[in-house]
Length: 226
Image 1 (cartoon, rainbow, N blue to C red):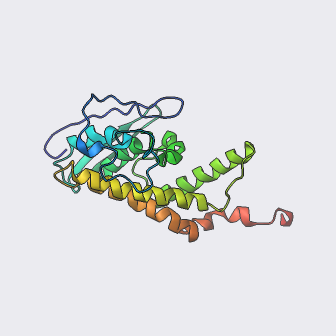
Image 2: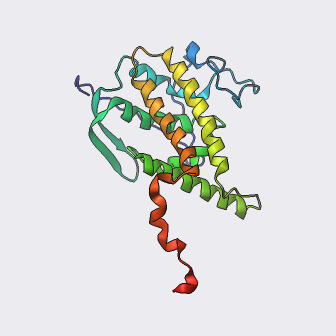
Image 3: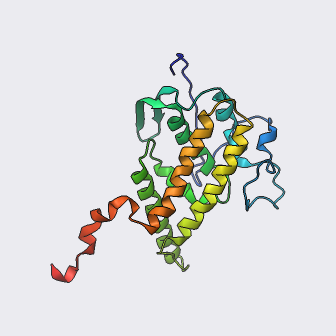
């Protein structure tokens, strides 16, 4: 960081379901309570759950960066078992959006669980086009899996639009939670970045998904003509 701080965070996920392995103590601030700015239509509302699992798992990151600004410049490295990603002179909000996104999806929120298949191939610093491509590809593979298991597939991707509408609502509520937990905007804007992707995916389904259709011209040719 610009002030010479060097921080490390370890994200541990279970090997079977890619579930976030909580390493926190018993501290549960008020802003982590389920009823605190609870998401509209929260699927945990009537389950006896006292605290939002996403908020609980975000608290160490949020607390660490509660006084940092979104535009602060950092150098960032992300080390996985397969490879290392690195980027210099990246904004704090961009770096935080990557780590917050992983934790949010793997924390046990039923609505966010639908994005869990993408965690294993997480792409840090992804562009908008890359994010849209990965989301649509993941959903279509999920429908192929449903069909193989005798379930009705959704090839129209309308179900994906519904999923991201729920995620949009979650992100809005999470920003309100974080406003109570932070002094500056680094973590807030990190979630805003995630929400911008959530808003763009449904628009891409109904539109041109970034103009990427042109890349699929070989699949539009009639095999009988070759």
